[in-house]
Length: 268
Ligand code: HPA
Image (cartoon, rainbow, N blue to C red; front, side):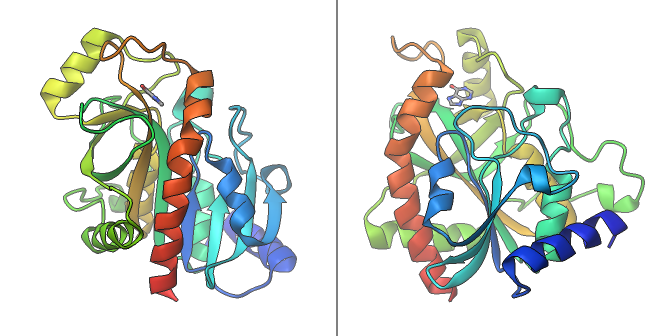
C-alpha cells in the first residue's frame, strides 16, 4: 500500500470506524441522493487528499461509509469524468482506497442514452459488456505487467446474476446490454450513434468504462447499471441535454435503489 493510500485509509477509519467495507458503489449523474440512504458518515472529497474535485452538477462529492441493508458499503457520490480534466485515471486513487478498506466488489452506476427501442427512458440496463469507443485507457503509464488486464469477463458473471435475480425479485426489468463509452462532454451526433449501433452498442454514456478497467486492475469484482435518461441522438425528437439527464435520472434511481437494497440483503 502506498503512503498516500495508507494515509487516506487512516483518515477514513478515524472518521467512520475501522469495520471492513464489503461493497463499493459509484453513483452516476442525478443518482447522488442514493448516498442519503446509507446510515453512516459522509466525508467530503475535499477532505480526502488526492480525491477528485468533481465539478459536474447533479453529483454529490462525498464518500459515504456506513450500512445499507445491514452491509457495510462505501458510496462514491460522484466520479470525476474524463471530460472534466482529460484524466482517464482520475478514479484510480478512490478505487485503490476502496480496495484497501476491504471491499471485494464494486457496482458502478451511470446515466446513459439508449440505442435500443425496447429500452426506454426510465428503464435500467445491466452492462453485459462494454466498448471503449474513446480509445482512452486509465492504465496508460502504469509500469508493471499488472497493466495487461484481461477483460474477457470484466463485468462479473456472478454479480450480474445476483443483480438479475434481485431485479426479478423486486419486479424491476433489468435487460442486459453493451455500453459504449463516448468521451463527451458534447453529446454524440446521430451518425456516431448509428456507428455505435453497428459496432454492437446498446447504450451510450460518458463514464464507467475507466472504473471497470481500474476495478479489474485492482482485483475488485465489478458490475455496472445504466439508468436510461433518453433515447440516443437521432432516435427521437426529444432534446438531449444535461438538464434532461438530471431530470430523468430519478425515474430509474427509484428502481435502482430497490434492486441494490435487495442485492445487499442477500449479501448480509
Ligand atoms: N449520451 C451520452 N451520455 C449520456 C446520454 C447520452 O445520450 N444520456 C445520459 N448520459
